[in-house]
Amino acid sequence: MSDIDCRVMKMNKKIFRSSLLVALLVLTASFVMIIGILFNYFQLQIEKELKNEAMYISIAIENEGAEYLKSIVNNEERVTLISADGTVIADTSVEAEELENHLDREEIKKALADGYGTSVRYSETLTEKVVYYAQLLDDGSILRVSTKQYTVVTVLLGLSQSISAVILFTFILSFILSSRVSKSIVKPINELDLDDPENNNNAYEELSPLLSKISSQHKTIEKQLHEAKKQQEEFSLITENMSDGLLVIDKNMQILMCNTSAKKLLNASGNINGNVFSVNRSKAFRQSVEKSLGGERFENEMIYNDKHYKIIANPVYEESEIIGAFIVIIDITDTIQREQMRREFTSNVSHELKTPLTSISGFAEMMMNGGIDEATVKDFSKSIYEEAQRLISLVIDIIRISELDEKSNIFVKEKVDLYELSEEIIERLKPQADKKSVKMNIFGGKAQVYGVRKILDEIIYNLCDNAVKYNNNGGTVDIIVRTTDDEAIITVRDNGIGIPESAQNRVFERFYRVDKSRSKEKGGTGLGLSIVKHGAVFHNAQITLDSQINEGTSITLKFPT
Ligand code: ADP
Image (cartoon, protein in one colour):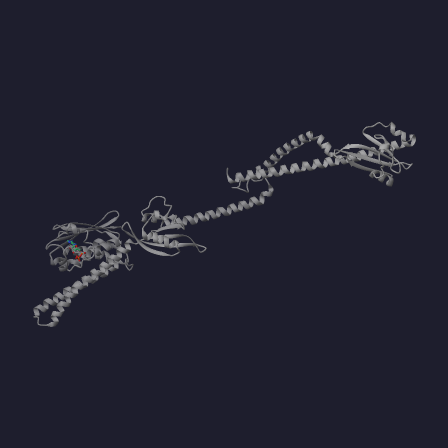
């Protein structure tokens, strides 16, 4: 049974009890009043009869004298003749001599004063009463007629059975009627359609203001619910699309909300609820939760499943009382790795710069000290020149790689034809290629890429430069440019020295060289392929390397078009 049904039933009982009580009270009051009115009426009737009788008897006494009383035989009534001094002259029930002086009787006193008098006297048991009527006769004597009458108590006692039956009957009748009345009052209320209070609810006109109030509250609640739902959806949309994990907990550390990213980061699945430590028990996580629930904003780092996370925990207050906390979990693995790479790069750069500078400084010092023949000075100058050239190439490459690292938006994208660009690069590399009698060929046709010309140039230049550099004398370099439905593809293939399989994964790392002295000798910086990789990532291009030692190397880049 619903709460509303329960309340309606209680209301029904209340109405029933009240109406039953009212019915019984009205019945009792009517009963008492009717009995009272009836008795009063009978009393007056008796007095009237006694008066009439007294009148007839007085006439008879005037004619026949006191002897007349002896002729009256009536058990119901008693007639007494009393002299003016109160002495009883004659009485129909008792011998006159036996009776005491009646002067003090109330009705006698009244009769002596007013000509007639009445009085009522109750028996000791109150079951009977006697009504007296006294009348002053012309000769000064007083004639008194009296009769017995049952009191209310006697009548009620005598009729107790019938009265009980009537009471029982009226009680049952009241009970049935009250029950019906209460049901008929409650029924329309029970049938009210509170979901649509203003329609089809015509039971009581008096309820209209209440029903329209309920209706307007209904509308307000619906509006508020709609707003709350909208806000909830917006909140879910935002939190679900966050790449960071978000956890909301109450003050008892129970999870109130956990977004998908948090589940993913913490490697949890399914419906997450219960204690927050069921999700993660690491020291850093515990500390963050405890500190935030202690009222402190707390930031911490944790390593979980080989990943680095930053935890930011904030307390949530309601009227200066902490009611919970929200915890943001950010995956900082990439940042940490980038920082690590930057540190390594800086130390590598320092090292790479130091080597040519040390050579330059050494040659210059020897020349400064003098005593060197002209031919040696020429050799030293050549070495200084070459080392300086290396330094320049190194600095240029470092600048390029830094630009790509910062994903600088100074780059302007445009449509670039890889075939045309390759032809230009072949021209530029011709002197180096001719020096080694390396033949450079281009195959294919137009392949347009929407990209940054400068970066695309560096990519193809570095690939072709390596293909010439690490080639044998008289070798060949083929550049193949082609397109598919959704890709522009360029392959730079040589038949040079090749890259050992163990190094193939590492050649794209910064400063990695298979043969350091050989690369140095060829003027390499160890950054060429790293620039190619960065450039490819910038253009969302895919790189594949295929190489066989002493057979040659082929590097392919696929650009989405
Ligand atoms: P470098 O400036 O030394 O050429 P790169 O990053 O361009 O640096 O290349 C890294 C290393 O990969 C080179 O030192 C070289 O050993 C190897 N390598 C690159 N391209 C080729 C190629 N076409 N044939 C053989 N080895 C190559």
